[in-house]
Length: 89
Image (spheres, rainbow, N blue to C red):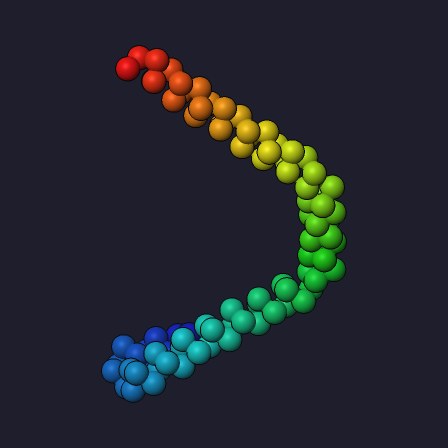
């Protein structure tokens, strides 16, 4: 089939139509592969997302604590820098 499309395209017969049909065929193949992969892996994807959600929910407290510590640490560092700078002036 692709050989026929290429031959017709090289002969210059309805190049725009042939190119459009070829792009449509490629798009349909990609769509079919995407759907088959997506629908076939639906259960696996659901399990992976559930695991990620559970892990994220379990680690949310640790992440919030780390963010609070980082925020308070950076504020102290900035304040300390300003105090040293004022001493030099």
